Image (cartoon, rainbow, N blue to C red; front, side, top):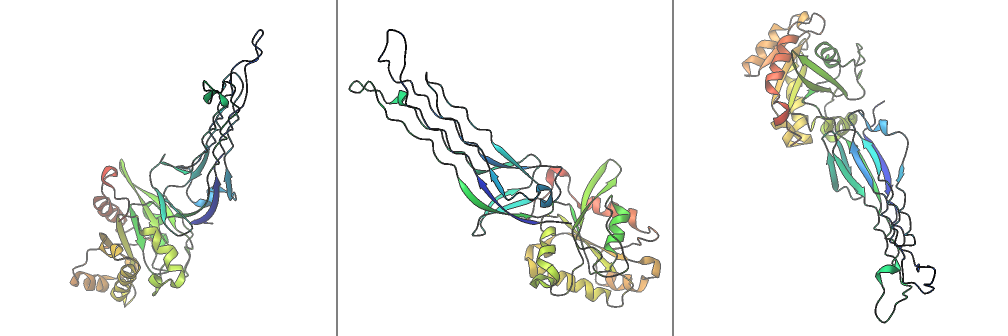
Length: 329
């Protein structure tokens, strides 16, 4: 199961109250004020965890509540501050508020974002003695914590995004060139959720994302198109996987490009490569059509392995190194 949307509530801890206290020492029955300050309330912090792949890894917890700070003590002792509550999220998590405004974009391993800041501790009566009031009873309570609803949306982080119609052979191809092991079957919509795989090429590697097959009208939401297309927004390079055995293969390619443009113009501007799949069935005629249109294509077969090494090399050359890798638009 793949979960790419989740709603959570976060509540930070209240700051501890300041204390009203007076020194009680032998021979000093009327000692001065010595009430300590309250401790800081715990914050709720979202942190990218490389072990998490989807929002499902967060479990069923909906409410994340940090503890409050301790009140101040006598003898000017400050109350203990509460520990921050760390909420692990997968890389690529987009955080929005109830109005849909983007609050944070968590794209790097180890990146953190304070979702709810802990309340400041209050002040004890030690701070309020004056020449005219040597025994103040005034304190300042701790500040309340913050409370908010957050809408989490996961957009996969990959270098290459595979795009194609159902049954074009995307799953078989990604199985052949990467570490991914998607479900493979000879029927449409075998892939029902995005799958990540690592392509190894000598000492170098890059990540590919296989999204479920698209249908015409995906950019308008047909066939869960919006939910699928958003997962290639962050990819640097697109790989169109086309069933080269179909007579209207080039028309299918044009439809796919139109759907990307309809979803977001920037998708249509990404560098791309075309894999004419099922070359074992004899697709030279289709290849000539694409070459006539001046499209760069590589003939591939997930059955025989033809073209797979050439495809990996070509994609590796198109993907920038990690230091230059694009994070999105």
